[in-house]
Image 1: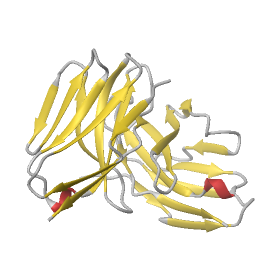
Image 2: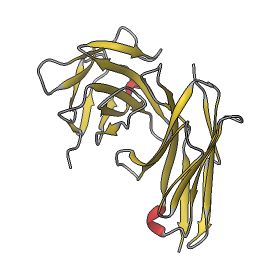
Image 3: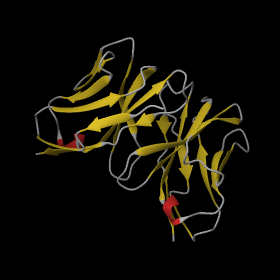
Length: 114
Length: 112
């Protein structure tokens, strides 16, 4: 069964550095998402992406964040200048159709900002 | 936007007993309600979902009920087993939206 994959599994960075989190969605899916989960808290929506553009974003997704689909398979989340509070698990998800279709989550990237 | 509340935050049951987790939502336009199970350090996994055109859905020991009028939906797990121990998240979305709004999670512990 195809799965969403994410790399790296764990990223440690210094405050102020840029990080890029990578995701490979399921191949026939059209909608892509990033979510964040601070340790012990709920999963929070960051952004959704369709047809090579952002379709929706939350208040968390400020100018420090950007997303890109640089080629036909990867979907990336960039954090330009990391802050301590960006430390969290970041999940990528994908679905065939809009949010009312099942979203399949990747294994996550644990980002630690020191 | 949508606001999803989930109760209880923690739940302990004896193996073989039933567990019920409840969620409420605020946006009457929401029409898709998935439940995810998340084991420690792992990705959320969809376990069951329900759309607004049905009131109940069952899959073996797991069932979900939806009350659109009251804007609440519940997860029912019967004959619980230790491997059911995990954090369970409910979520809601609408056809007009493009994201899931998650509840705060319920940590379920099944005591052998």
